[in-house]
Length: 120
Length: 107
Image (tube, rainbow over all chains, first blue to last red; front, side):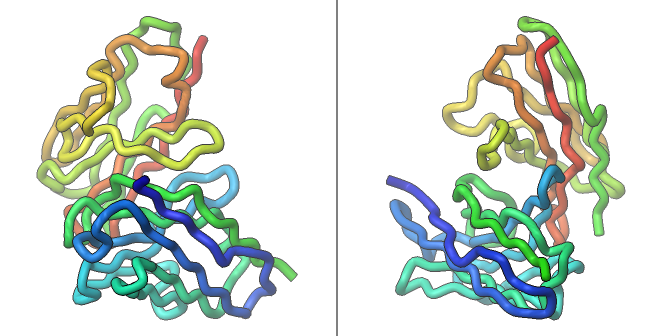
């Protein structure tokens, strides 16, 4: 079955760090770019970061640049998001999403999300 | 960053009605425009890619058109299962950006 399963979310204090993981299965992981997209409670979708198939091309939203780091391990079929210096406005449901090609473009498969709550 | 402006932000229509949503980009994005459906409590789902191409398995009542800066998404005959929020998304330039969403309800 083709699926993405996120993990690592939780309650964290402002200024602290958290690492999200996404386990992929059912497709050839290293053929595709991968992304993180988030959705704050009751709000719309916001692309956070994306990484090409070979990690040669990486992009970030301005709101997280310098604080978040995306990475992937093709041998483990896994995607990661290291989130540092977390702020209240980072509170959201974080989705892992599969790209449709090797380059950063759009998303044809989504996980169910992992909730990150930043609060003291 | 490319801004994507969707309208309306919400709409109410009857079953069988034709529903149209528009999305305007702040600069020319060619046809690098996609549409997603997000049902309540669910992850988004790709419906239309490259402005007008129907994703495999998506019902033919959904369609998209446009190029450059102005795009349209249409449901030809609204069904109860189409209750959702719809988002446009551009991929001409990084950062990838979404429209604000259009919530579709049944009248």
